[in-house]
Length: 196
Image (tube, rainbow, N blue to C red; front, side, top):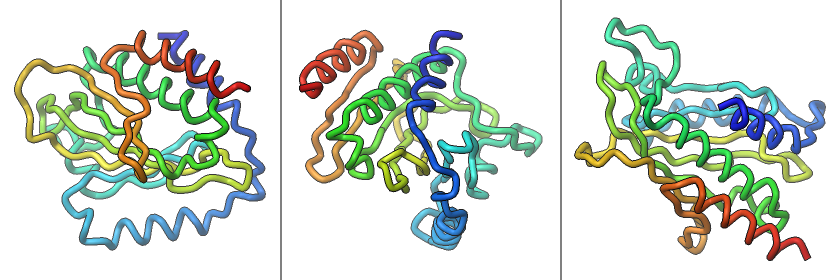
Protein backbone atom coordinates (compact mmCIF):
# COMPACT_ATOMS: atom_id res chain seq x y z
CA UNK A 1 0.00 0.00 0.00
CA UNK A 2 2.88 2.38 0.74
CA UNK A 3 4.20 1.85 -2.79
CA UNK A 4 0.77 2.71 -4.19
CA UNK A 5 0.59 5.88 -2.08
CA UNK A 6 4.07 6.85 -3.30
CA UNK A 7 3.04 6.35 -6.93
CA UNK A 8 -0.02 8.55 -6.32
CA UNK A 9 2.10 11.27 -4.67
CA UNK A 10 4.72 11.10 -7.46
CA UNK A 11 2.03 11.51 -10.13
CA UNK A 12 0.57 14.52 -8.34
CA UNK A 13 4.06 16.01 -7.98
CA UNK A 14 4.50 15.80 -11.78
CA UNK A 15 1.99 18.59 -12.10
CA UNK A 16 3.59 21.98 -11.62
CA UNK A 17 0.89 24.43 -10.61
CA UNK A 18 1.32 28.17 -10.30
CA UNK A 19 -0.98 29.04 -7.41
CA UNK A 20 -1.48 32.59 -8.68
CA UNK A 21 -3.07 31.18 -11.88
CA UNK A 22 -5.73 29.19 -10.01
CA UNK A 23 -8.84 31.34 -9.56
CA UNK A 24 -11.08 30.43 -6.61
CA UNK A 25 -13.96 32.06 -8.52
CA UNK A 26 -13.80 29.11 -10.94
CA UNK A 27 -14.45 26.71 -8.04
CA UNK A 28 -17.30 28.89 -6.77
CA UNK A 29 -18.87 28.97 -10.26
CA UNK A 30 -18.77 25.16 -10.57
CA UNK A 31 -20.16 24.67 -7.06
CA UNK A 32 -23.01 27.11 -7.74
CA UNK A 33 -23.88 25.45 -11.06
CA UNK A 34 -23.77 21.91 -9.70
CA UNK A 35 -25.59 22.61 -6.43
CA UNK A 36 -28.45 24.42 -8.17
CA UNK A 37 -28.91 21.99 -11.08
CA UNK A 38 -31.96 19.72 -10.82
CA UNK A 39 -30.22 17.34 -13.27
CA UNK A 40 -27.94 16.09 -10.51
CA UNK A 41 -30.43 15.97 -7.62
CA UNK A 42 -30.28 12.15 -7.43
CA UNK A 43 -26.51 11.81 -7.86
CA UNK A 44 -23.71 12.09 -5.32
CA UNK A 45 -21.40 14.83 -6.61
CA UNK A 46 -17.99 15.98 -5.48
CA UNK A 47 -15.22 18.17 -6.86
CA UNK A 48 -11.63 17.28 -6.03
CA UNK A 49 -8.86 19.90 -6.22
CA UNK A 50 -5.64 18.14 -7.29
CA UNK A 51 -3.55 21.19 -6.41
CA UNK A 52 -4.86 21.39 -2.85
CA UNK A 53 -5.43 17.60 -2.57
CA UNK A 54 -8.87 18.13 -1.07
CA UNK A 55 -12.54 17.98 -1.86
CA UNK A 56 -13.77 21.53 -2.46
CA UNK A 57 -17.38 20.40 -2.85
CA UNK A 58 -19.53 17.46 -1.80
CA UNK A 59 -23.24 17.66 -2.56
CA UNK A 60 -25.83 17.29 0.19
CA UNK A 61 -27.02 14.08 -1.48
CA UNK A 62 -23.42 12.76 -1.43
CA UNK A 63 -23.21 13.45 2.31
CA UNK A 64 -26.60 11.82 3.00
CA UNK A 65 -25.91 8.77 0.82
CA UNK A 66 -22.53 8.02 2.35
CA UNK A 67 -23.31 8.97 5.95
CA UNK A 68 -23.08 6.30 8.62
CA UNK A 69 -26.22 4.79 10.15
CA UNK A 70 -26.30 7.63 12.69
CA UNK A 71 -26.38 10.21 9.90
CA UNK A 72 -22.79 11.37 10.42
CA UNK A 73 -20.77 11.95 7.25
CA UNK A 74 -17.00 11.53 7.48
CA UNK A 75 -16.28 10.62 3.86
CA UNK A 76 -16.97 7.85 1.41
CA UNK A 77 -15.90 4.40 2.63
CA UNK A 78 -14.86 1.94 -0.05
CA UNK A 79 -15.22 -1.78 0.74
CA UNK A 80 -11.90 -3.07 2.14
CA UNK A 81 -11.78 -5.86 -0.47
CA UNK A 82 -12.14 -3.28 -3.28
CA UNK A 83 -10.00 -0.43 -1.92
CA UNK A 84 -6.56 -1.47 -3.19
CA UNK A 85 -7.89 -2.27 -6.68
CA UNK A 86 -9.76 1.07 -6.83
CA UNK A 87 -6.56 2.88 -5.86
CA UNK A 88 -4.46 0.92 -8.39
CA UNK A 89 -6.91 1.67 -11.18
CA UNK A 90 -7.02 5.35 -10.20
CA UNK A 91 -3.22 5.57 -10.26
CA UNK A 92 -3.13 3.81 -13.64
CA UNK A 93 -5.70 6.25 -15.05
CA UNK A 94 -3.70 9.22 -13.70
CA UNK A 95 -0.54 7.79 -15.24
CA UNK A 96 -2.35 7.33 -18.56
CA UNK A 97 -3.44 10.99 -18.64
CA UNK A 98 -0.48 12.70 -16.94
CA UNK A 99 2.31 10.87 -18.77
CA UNK A 100 0.84 10.93 -22.27
CA UNK A 101 1.28 14.43 -23.74
CA UNK A 102 -1.18 13.80 -26.56
CA UNK A 103 -3.91 12.86 -24.10
CA UNK A 104 -2.89 15.29 -21.35
CA UNK A 105 -3.65 18.37 -23.41
CA UNK A 106 -7.17 17.17 -24.08
CA UNK A 107 -7.77 15.72 -20.62
CA UNK A 108 -11.26 17.23 -20.43
CA UNK A 109 -12.22 14.84 -23.23
CA UNK A 110 -11.68 11.72 -21.10
CA UNK A 111 -13.50 10.24 -18.16
CA UNK A 112 -12.80 7.42 -15.76
CA UNK A 113 -15.82 5.16 -15.26
CA UNK A 114 -15.63 2.54 -12.55
CA UNK A 115 -17.68 0.22 -10.37
CA UNK A 116 -16.84 -0.84 -6.83
CA UNK A 117 -18.53 -1.24 -3.46
CA UNK A 118 -18.97 1.59 -0.96
CA UNK A 119 -20.83 1.95 2.33
CA UNK A 120 -24.23 3.52 1.64
CA UNK A 121 -27.15 3.49 4.04
CA UNK A 122 -25.39 1.19 6.47
CA UNK A 123 -24.47 -1.53 3.94
CA UNK A 124 -21.86 -1.99 1.25
CA UNK A 125 -23.45 -1.46 -2.15
CA UNK A 126 -22.05 -1.51 -5.65
CA UNK A 127 -21.72 2.02 -7.00
CA UNK A 128 -20.82 3.47 -10.38
CA UNK A 129 -18.55 6.49 -10.51
CA UNK A 130 -17.84 8.80 -13.44
CA UNK A 131 -14.82 11.06 -12.96
CA UNK A 132 -14.17 13.82 -15.45
CA UNK A 133 -11.75 16.74 -15.57
CA UNK A 134 -13.58 20.02 -14.97
CA UNK A 135 -10.61 22.39 -15.18
CA UNK A 136 -6.96 22.38 -16.19
CA UNK A 137 -4.48 25.19 -15.76
CA UNK A 138 -2.83 27.03 -18.66
CA UNK A 139 -0.13 24.32 -18.96
CA UNK A 140 -2.58 21.42 -19.05
CA UNK A 141 -2.20 20.32 -15.43
CA UNK A 142 -5.41 18.66 -14.22
CA UNK A 143 -6.76 20.96 -11.51
CA UNK A 144 -10.42 20.14 -10.72
CA UNK A 145 -12.08 16.74 -11.17
CA UNK A 146 -15.81 16.08 -10.96
CA UNK A 147 -17.01 12.79 -9.49
CA UNK A 148 -20.60 11.62 -10.05
CA UNK A 149 -21.53 8.54 -8.01
CA UNK A 150 -24.75 6.53 -8.22
CA UNK A 151 -25.94 3.30 -6.67
CA UNK A 152 -25.60 0.62 -9.37
CA UNK A 153 -28.76 -1.23 -10.38
CA UNK A 154 -26.62 -4.41 -10.38
CA UNK A 155 -26.14 -5.56 -6.78
CA UNK A 156 -25.51 -9.24 -7.59
CA UNK A 157 -22.16 -11.03 -7.22
CA UNK A 158 -19.50 -11.35 -8.40
CA UNK A 159 -18.24 -8.08 -6.95
CA UNK A 160 -15.40 -7.15 -9.26
CA UNK A 161 -13.84 -3.72 -9.44
CA UNK A 162 -14.26 -2.61 -13.05
CA UNK A 163 -12.68 0.53 -14.52
CA UNK A 164 -12.21 2.12 -17.91
CA UNK A 165 -10.94 5.39 -19.31
CA UNK A 166 -13.27 6.59 -22.07
CA UNK A 167 -12.76 9.21 -24.77
CA UNK A 168 -16.01 11.20 -24.48
CA UNK A 169 -15.91 12.30 -28.13
CA UNK A 170 -15.45 8.89 -29.75
CA UNK A 171 -16.68 6.58 -27.00
CA UNK A 172 -13.48 4.55 -27.30
CA UNK A 173 -12.24 2.92 -24.11
CA UNK A 174 -8.50 3.59 -24.17
CA UNK A 175 -8.02 1.70 -20.93
CA UNK A 176 -10.32 -1.06 -19.73
CA UNK A 177 -9.34 -3.34 -16.92
CA UNK A 178 -10.22 -5.53 -14.04
CA UNK A 179 -6.64 -6.25 -13.08
CA UNK A 180 -3.71 -3.91 -12.54
CA UNK A 181 -1.27 -6.06 -14.51
CA UNK A 182 -3.23 -5.36 -17.70
CA UNK A 183 -3.00 -1.62 -17.06
CA UNK A 184 0.71 -1.74 -16.28
CA UNK A 185 1.41 -3.52 -19.55
CA UNK A 186 -0.81 -1.05 -21.41
CA UNK A 187 0.95 1.96 -19.87
CA UNK A 188 4.34 0.57 -20.89
CA UNK A 189 3.13 0.04 -24.46
CA UNK A 190 1.53 3.49 -24.58
CA UNK A 191 4.65 5.17 -23.20
CA UNK A 192 6.81 3.42 -25.81
CA UNK A 193 4.35 4.27 -28.61
CA UNK A 194 3.96 7.97 -27.78
CA UNK A 195 7.48 8.76 -26.58
CA UNK A 196 8.80 9.42 -30.10
